[in-house]
Image (cartoon, rainbow, N blue to C red; front, side, top):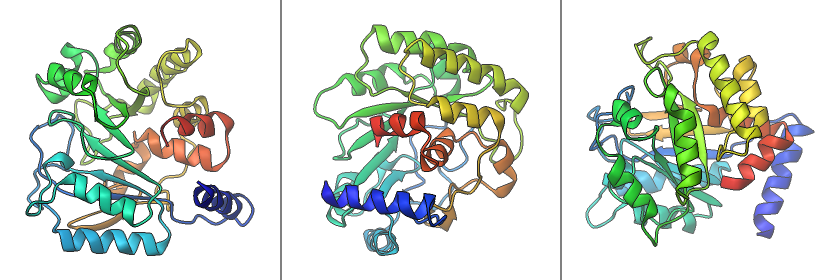
Length: 293
């Protein structure tokens, strides 16, 4: 704990006083294989396959030596990753052994949630009818996985697109009233990775949706986005390509995310906004991140 406090204290000093942006969050696309074919996804089943254990270890050691202290695994579907007898739990153990303070896993939830991570982010974009439009008919099995015992803490990612937008409030009330055992729901917006499509909502269309989320925050609904983060996202005034965050996969390394630069003006990754606002010590963003970081 003392090591963590010292690290984050130095990080705050470097960013606020010295105006530097040291490394913080390292993401690993451990495989591109996925058992689903979600609408809007452009990083699954591209042919890259699984990282070998040797390359994975080298990536993580290098990231640790460069100063990254928080790490997440993504895909594809990271629960599918294998190298011999090793699975995602072995990768998580290695991250902890290397000294990463927080290790998160992003999953679709259909293969269970037991992985040894500090937190599992599970994609659930609304109640069954809305969810089905983005990920298929898997809502019940994901709900069962979340309600099962013995796995790490869980938080939900809900991607807002033209099909899922009307399901926001009913889903939040269901999470609250059914006592779904999650920390809360982080709302992303569909990002046009390779050009605009039928799922995309532009800035003018996003604005009233953000207002609905802000109202949900005021009502105490289980929303993980902070007020500061939502307001910055609505304004569009927040830095793209945050150098504090890097993600790597079999094809190489990217700053912030794996989307092309052309998608940056229409980015919907609100977690990046939350990091940017927390870095500026916006109180609501710092408090919100403390719930899941």
